[in-house]
Image (cartoon, rainbow, N blue to C red; front, side):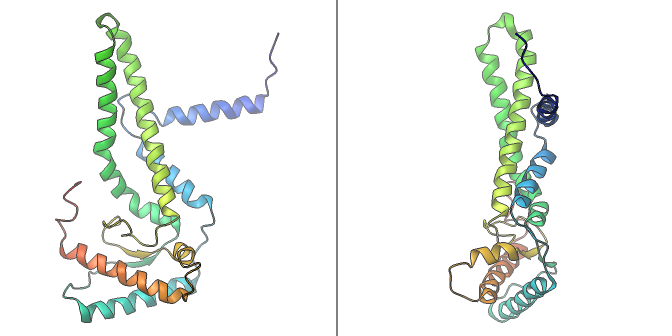
Length: 223
């Protein structure tokens, strides 16, 4: 008995398979661009509107006031870096490379461990078959790692309010806030949004001064 097939459905299925296979590599390396694209898609999946002129001006004012206060209260000088307002997708664009630097050693270790485990478990006479199988599984491992990283960065982009939320400089030589996420962060706090933005601008600017003053030390653990 023949099984009816919908040509449109089959075309969509093959397109999905082709997209998955294009993210694979035989040597187990991670397709970082696929991870970045996945993160950008998640960042834009919910409302990520372009910033209005008033929103950008509010960020500039908050950054300026935060800088003046820090000038008087700290000995760390203000770094000559751009002060920006980002949408979520821009946060991904500016921060993803740092996540890649952190994740690369882990990705390599995962692929290597999978290959070694298979080599040890398969009988010697099947080594020729193992060569192809291990290569394919290593590629699948790299693809899955890319998707997991993209998922994590994309989810974080919906919550991050600045470039230093997790305590490290994700976007070197940038000082930035994410107004859309700041508005969501302030819901239920019963405080004016501008006061919340000023507090977060102060935190971001202080982080940037610290990172700039200790440049060469903060990133040692993964560089």
